[in-house]
Length: 386
Image (cartoon, rainbow, N blue to C red):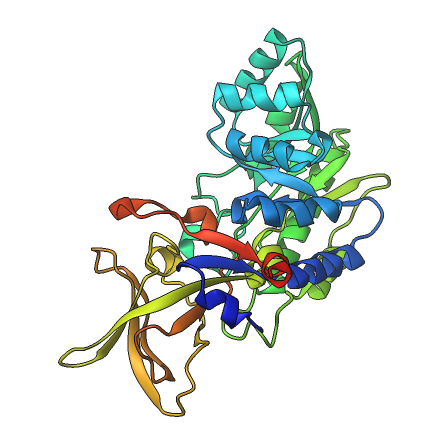
């Protein structure tokens, strides 16, 4: 990725930089794979930066939200309410009411108690709440335990064995309309076989429900497609072709059914970079530390998931290489971006680019240690500055 380094030098670090040209190319790559009756709801939990959301709205996508705050952010950004879906195991009353009054497309419901609360609130407001039941397919995805969501022991969704009973229960609730089924098996999934297994499980469930005369209009397969953190320049756009082809091949849609997707990371991760300045290079007894002004408050994924992000010294002209632990300034031993990492010899004042941080980077930033939240800039903004 090319950076406007001269402009970077004048900016206070750390900050997030978004390549909006790459974002637009990614959005077009997704659109090229969509078929009639297929709908994309961007998973806004990945990134709610208004500048990023603006591009996604312009692409015509809907939104997948997991909180009332996300619903409001999407409405403010211009997403049509009838393209917003609302998931999450713990929807509070005010969040449900916000969705009801806005007229969102549907609530992805994760339990019978939630279903009954939505019915009660919809009755109070004179509304009929459209819902899709999130079914736990008991599919274990090949990903980190903390971001796997489709196994029987995970907190998400309604048990597979209870699907029919819950659909029947919906019929007894006067202010609920069950319009579909929802699934989501995890995040950062690169094995297409995981999505094929999900599709086959959906087929199995649909066949079972049809023996009872139950036909639902919408199937939502969630998201979860991963990206290449090792080589972001080699693979700047996720493998959307294989992802969508898997569902085309394995999922048996019924006539007139609508198919919904909820991709997040795959859309925004590669367009984002966290830019940080080197504060000190410290030589310890056994290793060298590159201490930068970004910390786990700005990007928590390495500390939380042991996640890898490629790091590049974008201002060094050194030919020599050295091995460093790249760490932040936070008073926690876990504030480490990478250990034993080889890169050009690094000095105080150098700028480092931490790649593939457009998803779950800025949105998860905190003010621990009373730090300020990182600023953000787009390639469009910086290119237009005098």
